[in-house]
Length: 411
Image 1: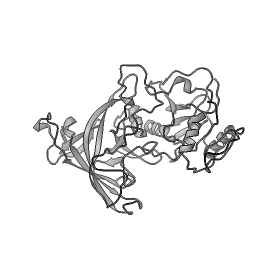
Image 2: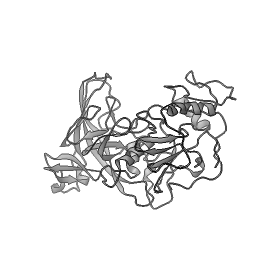
Image 3: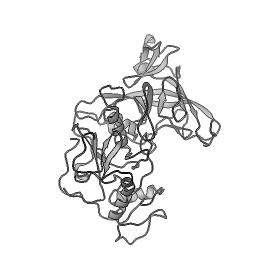
Image 4: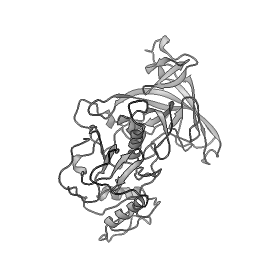
């Protein structure tokens, strides 16, 4: 199993109980911690130059932006005419289909992307095109989260080398800056690294990307396109695509199931049904795989209970949902209600009926906790998502459990 089951009773923290109906979480991850240009996510792109569904095209011709490292011999450097490619999760340069440069020789090389604005956003109008040259400035690596059998995943720092954009303010992208925000480490604060020989580099803040090759994903986290030419630039800190890869899922691995990757991505972004996500940035979660594989990154054992199940997951999403992971307890959830004030639906925030003090702001509605949670789940029941039984179905890949949940549970 992923982590030993906590014994005893999981109690909610004292004080008011809040629950938040989450904002939709992009398939890239929660918190919009991904590269953006003119409000367009720079995610899945095609090495052959085919535009993705967001109107982003990658131009594969490599450009020498800065001198190569001195220790790279001249015969190992990328020659003129080399094209960008990806092999085994790493950038390489090719000529005529053969690899001609790799590893440190890729440092200082760059490639262009083109963005077609999909809607009016300062400083461009719908249909306006912009170009950006992205330079490979650093490389590193991370182990996957497996306690046994971890593999190494290359990572890169990519920077905006040149921006050819309509005049005006742009999304925070600026020349020389990383395309990824430096906000989070590969693991979030609530994740725990088990004692082992493995480096704890997962807890170091980063603005690197890792490469997920072989699939392009729709808004509902299902596979839209498949093939080796499709690559994703997944910011290591905070994105679901990066977490999926660090959990060991690689679309280029023929031994893995596409349904299992979809299940993992839907699980990480809480896509119970369809494109809507039922989570928000930083929400902790306990996950257990059906084959009992063990991972680093579990929450504290005392913070969750196997008696309190969120959902079971297969390639279609959640097979069942009993509790929502966002119903946190105590001050933690009260803080999230203050920070996430937009209310797309009722039951955005809830207080117990005995609470007499007022509201966080005008967006907060007061409900008894138990009634509010049930009503928040009603839309899923209306979509024929049942509560979970005792045992997951045979085709479930994951079972998830809410962490620091407001609901009291006992074994």
